[in-house]
Image (cartoon, rainbow, N blue to C red; front, top):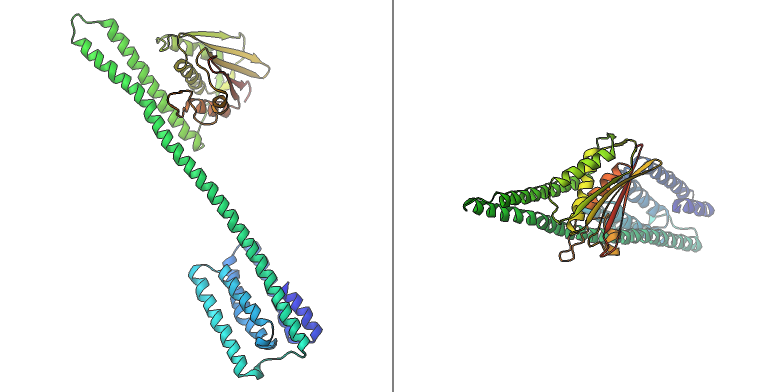
Length: 395
């Protein structure tokens, strides 16, 4: 744009040499612009620009445009600024210093050998050249610096946001590690306690087999709890890495729920709770990963057990056109409204004495979503919790 304007002005003053040079600049600049746009090789275009325009064309124009009595010294400043902006690190410093030395040398040559310089025909032409150079360089440098500063500010905002997220992730990592240690420590302590008690019972006479069997059942429950925690941890890693895989086969949800009930009934309830199962008859099979669904239901029952004492845990299966819905409800402590809203988003536990991340609901959410289903919950403090999830009959 600058070269085109300069060519038109030179045409008006009759300086045909400057017209030709500026038209060459228009062609070179346009060619470099298109080449960089389509090739993406910006550094190569920067070097061509510096060598051809800043180091060759500008010195020629200096002698054909009045020397240091015209507007070319402003373009020398322009060249140095853009060299620093375009090149990187040490290369920018070396080339910009080379340009400074060259431009100082040009001015000294013009001073000692003034006959090498083509003067302006009139003082008005000289003034026009100086003003045009001043306005052009000021405008272009101002625009470029504006966008550079704008991009810098945007990068700063992005950097602040990334730092905030990193701090949040670091805090989450610390909390997560504390969570895992806390979650596993409880069943391990229970295993250690009941194993030691069983060892002491073996030394007593007569042997109390019923108490030893109770200790072994408690140990078994604790081992199963650790197993579920480890499985949830492994699933969490798979989910975050996008590797959660499903093995979809025709599945009868009613049969699946009966197997879960049978497994629950084979172990005494830790909270002395009663399990109630209601199933709508004659529901068709759906395409699902049975093992994953058992994991979901077991997780939901485990959560209900942990927050319910001497109550009832109800599992129901109902159907509607295209969907089948399972609900696991309890009569336990329930959740606050804030916790209910965030329960499926990321590791919230209802334990008031120890605020920690619970991964069970998060894993359930991801498994149901992977099935093309939806999961939601209803809960109030002191009134229990209902967790629903619906699965499509056709995936």
